[in-house]
Image (cartoon, rainbow, N blue to C red; front, side):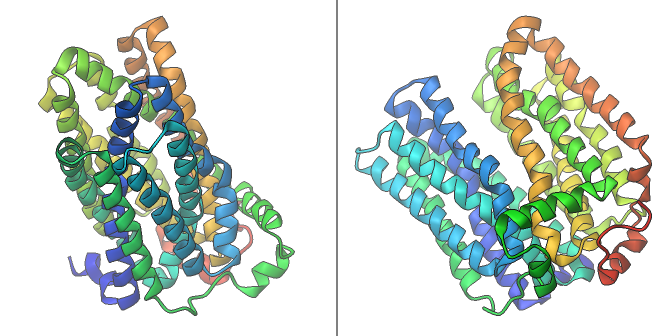
Amino acid sequence: MRMMVAPLAARDFRRYYVGQTASAFGDALTPLAIAFAVLDLTGSPVDLGIVVLSTRLPVILLTLLGGAAGDRFSRRTVMLLADMTRFAAHGVTAVLLLTGTASVWMLVVLQLLAGAGSAFFNPAAVGLVVSLAGRERLQAANSLISISRSTASMLALGTAGALVALAGSGWAIAVDALTFLVSAAYLYRLPSDLPAAPVAGRVRDGGRLLASVRGGFAEVRGRSWLWVWTVHAAVTNLAVVSPILVLGPYVADRQLGGAPAWSAIGIAYAAGGLAGGLLGARWRPARPMAAAILLFLLMAPFPALLALPAGVWVLALAAGAAGLQLVVYNVLQTTCIQHRLPERFVARATSVTMLGGLVAAPLGMALAGPAAALLGTRPVLGGCAAVAVLLTAATLLMPAVWRVRAEHAAHAADADPVREPTE
């Protein structure tokens, strides 16, 4: 336990952690609130799809620039500007809804703006944790952040429904806006001289954001273990996770009793994520990439049982296992990037690894419905389970997966290599 909470002894990390916990709570409120806001305005599923797409599109298009900015400029400043942008976007959204003056096109514009803020915030945050927690405490720090997100999600799932039902979507989004202000306030209290990318990295990249983006791609391409991980994450989002997100609510509505059943399964998933954060803080496998890929097998039972479908409590247990593996997978991946890459490339490399999943997720969601209409829900969900098993087996056959050893992580960062000598 002492090792797990050790990063909180650092005052600056503690400030960042409190701000991000508040922001994570607000983030979990928004999807449900926005969905019901659109349905209250028009009742159109097409309009809902357009607004949901508007939250994702800027993240897909701008994440690489966000990663470059996070390595080129002060990460604290980049994140502050992103938080204030999201505060403004969600604040105006709340005002429009509460005053009854909102329209769908306004929500689309504001969600595009909020998504742009997220595209710049997230990659910079991965780099900032290196400065705040110290390299020797990175895995514990990443686990603590995952724990706070999972806990916030569980609390927000219940709060969002109550706020929307009792006070309306506008008040739920107003709470989200305030959480970004809280996050910005804690970021502002961090030292203003937190390091940006080293000067050597800026000179090498030619002083331009687009050149920095190319540098990030080169770093990922030059490390076979990292691009293998990037492809694995993209395929899992496309063929396993996204179909569950689309077809799970459909199965729950038709065969499990509706929204309460899916809500219980979602809470179990978040609880599994909380357990994953606790495990991720203490478990240090000798080969972290192989361990993360192998752990992905815990995802397979969830779509398989959903295809039957099994009972709600059995599905809740499977969802908990899926949530646990997701958090441990992300903790190990993030820690490997932070340890094994020079700090000046961390945000850019993170943005490249994020991009694969960001592009794959909406594509998987778009294909899931037509596939289920053509083949049936049960075969599609069964196929998701089969892909999880086969993809894990195929990835574990790649030598690069086994080259990533925990005992070499600290030395890799100190040597500051441009490429790993083993690849």
